[in-house]
Length: 278
Image (tube, rainbow, N blue to C red; front, side, top):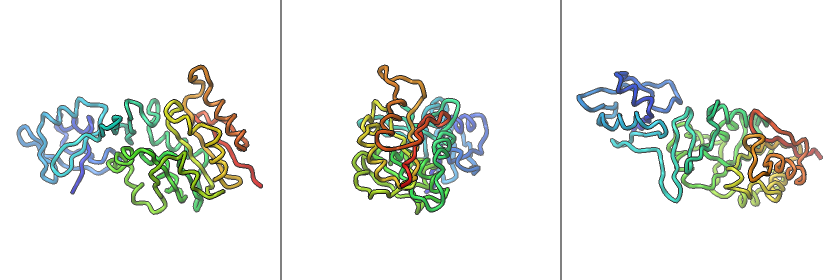
């Protein structure tokens, strides 16, 4: 059964008479033809959507919609928290109004490339991606030939990744292994010196302070091979949290955990570090 994705962009195109639209949030150049019949739009699989629903989508610049099995759904989950895909290209995920990728003056794909390029995973290397999210980091590392273990704590995030067409490679690429669990606990199960590269992109400090702790950094150090590379996303340089410089504290704790050549990477808003060679 076909799934068609709609944002305000596609809805506005339909309302202004452009009946060929992209159905996969810009992931490919694919076009589908939608027919206009009276006050309805008819999609290629026969699904009929009323014009009033298309008008509603056209007004909503903050949400992704999709058509599946003849019905229109929001790509959103309301449980203990509110989760939704945001129609950036590619989409980001928003949890209680907080976006999980940088979108100001960039997009989630450029944001991902900036992070991955700091450690440049190579063919045959093993990569630990501590916080999967929509999986763009894991996908990019796997495309470079690395074998990736990616961890995600929140089942709602995994569910949205399954909905997002830009995340489908997570579930089809044999180089990617997904572990559902808390990185703080899961990392204890890995062998010493198991990974060549670690990409650590945790939620903000106020939401997951344990992932910024020296104890956790020592686990990162333990599972990294000698000479291995670490990238740690921190956030906007110079920002203060309760008058404390988070980035400086991260760098100090990484050094205490044993990492060397710890330095800021301004373009990726994070820190890179190495585990010393023997």
